Image: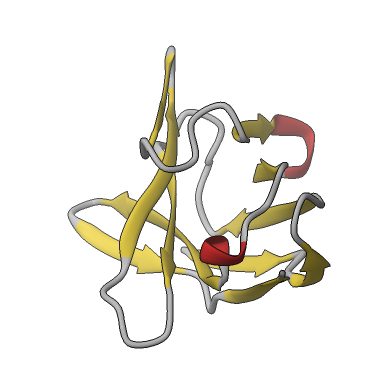
Length: 113
């Protein structure tokens, strides 16, 4: 299983970015996929997860971020709106498959004030 995260960049506060996690090596359309982030000097934290019939979000991003699946592209997207400086972090996508955790390489999101 391989995960390729993309879409990060520099944006002003209040702006938007769309992250994408391309999944290969397994059929992924029903695989639970999560997004996590790690800010400098902090632990990695949960952001959002998609699984069949359910979406979940961290309280800090509810109402601003939306996770979705693109089955045609075998990818999971994270639409991030109303970005805040505290959203600055490296964002990682994650799956667990056959008892093994897989992480993408991370994509940096920087939100300037």
